[in-house]
Every structure is written in C-alpha cells, then in structure tokens.
Amino acid sequence: MAHFNPAQAQPLEPLLDLVDVDITRGKRQLLCNLNLAFNAGEFIALAGENGCGKSSLLTVLGGLAPLEKGTLSFNGQPLSEISLQRLADYRAVMAQSASTPFGFLVDEILQLARHHIVESPANRHHIIGEIAEQFDITHLLSRNIQTLSGGERQRVFLSKAILQLLPISSHDSLEGKLLLLDEPTSALDLRHQKLVMQQLVSLSQQGLCIVCVSHDLNLISPYCSRMILLAEQGCIADDKPENALTIDTLARCYHTQLNLIRNLDNDVFVTH
Ligand SMILES: Nc1ncnc2c1ncn2[C@@H]1O[C@H](COP(=O)(O)OP(=O)(O)OP(=O)(O)O)[C@@H](O)[C@H]1O
Image 1 (cartoon, rainbow, N blue to C red):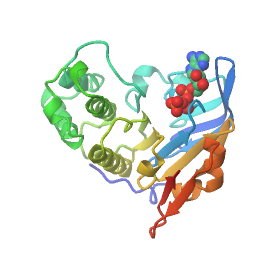
Image 2 (cartoon, protein in one colour):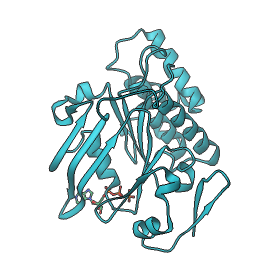
Image 3 (cartoon, protein in one colour):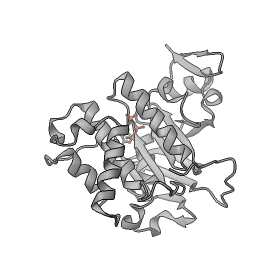
Image 4 (cartoon, rainbow, N blue to C red):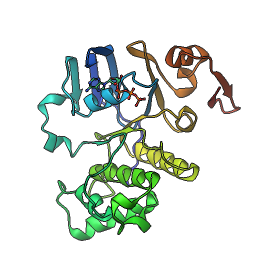
C-alpha cells in the first residue's frame, strides 16, 4: 500500500471542514458554533462525557443526519450535495452498536462492503482475506454473524467499514477518504485492542483520515495523532493527546477529579 507522508502533503483545503455547526437533538442543543477541520492522514480521537454529542457529531460528519446550522464540506464540496452512493467510495461509518437483523455469514457481510466497487472476484477475495487476517477474523468467515461474541462482531464490522474504502490496488493511496468509528474497541480484549490500534495507525499512515469516538483515553492516546475533547457544547481541547489531556480539561469534560501520569516518552495516562 502506498505510504502517505502528511509532512510532504500540501492540501489546498482540509478533507472535512466544519464551520459554525450547531447540533440539536430533541430539545437539547448539544454542540454550538463548532469549527473543526480534519486532514488526510490524521488519526483523531473524539472524547467527552456520555450524552455530550459525540455520536450525533459522527452521524453529521458522515452525512447521515442533516445540518441544522453551519456548513460542512468534504473534499471541497458541500457534503449535502454528494449522493450517498458516491459518498460510499470516500467515507465509511461504523456505528456504536453495529449489527444486522439477518443471519448473514461473516464473509457475505464483508462482500457487501464492496458491492459498489467494480473488481474481479479474485481481487475481492484477496482483499477480504487480507483484512480478515489483519483483524483476526479469518476463522470466523463462515460463521453466522448472529452467533458471534460482542468482540468478534465488533472486529467484523470494523473490517467491513475498512473494506468499503480500500482501493482495488494496494498501490493506490487512501488519501481523500474518511473512516468514522464509534467506540470500535469497547468490546475487545487487550490483544485485539492493541491489534486494532496498530492497524488504524497503519491505515492513517497510508493517508486515511480516521475519526474515532472512544471513552478509553489510555488506550487511544499513545496511538492517535490528535485528540478532541467535547464539553460545554463545544470543543474544549483539540491538540496532540499529551497537550489536550490536562487536569483542567478532564475536570471540565467529566465533572470529576481525575489524575494524570506522564511517562518518559511524554505519553499521558488518566487515573482515578
Ligand atoms: N433522536 C433523538 N431524540 C432526542 N434525543 C436524542 C436523540 N438522539 C440523541 N439524543 C440525545 O442526545 C444526546 C447526545 O447523544 P449522543 O448519542 O450523541 O451522545 P454521546 O456523546 O455519543 O454519548 P455516549 O458516550 O453515551 O455514547 C443524548 O442525551 C441523547 O439522549
């Protein structure tokens, strides 16, 4: 896969540009006058307390919910003007409780992810096989999705979202594409948490922009390139994780006293 170097890239505009956006759900204004820009090759963690609007923001970023106020452009074009069919080539979303009401086989679900891509069956089989190996689901390919454990299912739906975006040729870059993940590691054991984080870093190094909602700050901090903390109806920190996470931002986010430990590499760890 082509290697993407963000330092060499000189994008004229961000991949995703959010200007003065409000998000309201029911009678509650969740986010107000939000301004954010996301670029190719970034791995961005999105954190904040329960109910602050992370999933709602993700659905807006993915073009799955209309904008009430503000503008949102994707690759320089208003997101609302891009058809869902075309959007499927450029952005994939993994919802918090991704599931299916039908008893598909895992392999069938992964094949569905590439239905919009014109490629040979052999190519499709090869790419699915590679991703299945990377996310440790090869042994699950012939299983009924409804019989899988929570963590197994989570790895299948994460693989599906990634397969939707992978180019036909491994020589093509993932630059210009966006992966939106809502708590993709919440059901994973330690080995699979680490495996998923390493794979996400690798994909972002190939140019993919990843926005990942997570409550597990200690898991994601050493891997993400940027951390956004949502609180007080907006973004209260947007920086490298070691700068975004402070006693003050954590207290504003979670309304409780938390402690921070820094290691020699300046990685930060949050403790109670
Ligand atoms: N359709 C809806 N109607 C009314 N309220 C809604 C609707 N959708 C979401 N909400 C409310 O909006 C708030 C934000 O929800 P959202 O799912 O975005 O939060 P979140 O930050 O992702 O939370 P969590 O960490 O618990 O996943 C919540 O209080 C939720 O109850």
